[in-house]
Image (cartoon, rainbow, N blue to C red; front, side, top):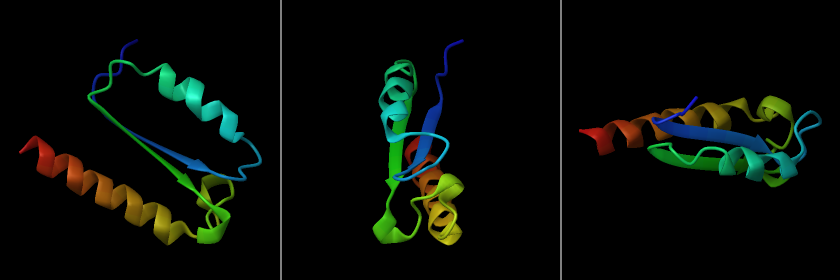
Length: 75
């Protein structure tokens, strides 16, 4: 299956389920995306855990801002 749309990948620096090393192979497996945005949340931001627990607002703001940017670029 080819993903050809804009793609946002969020990660967490100290995720206890998904190691940081997993993100590069995921990114490499998406050669057909229209655009790829990768954001790794950090301990300094208090968003380093799985699902960015600790700073949900930052994660949601990031998603909302990404949607706005994608929408503007497609207009």
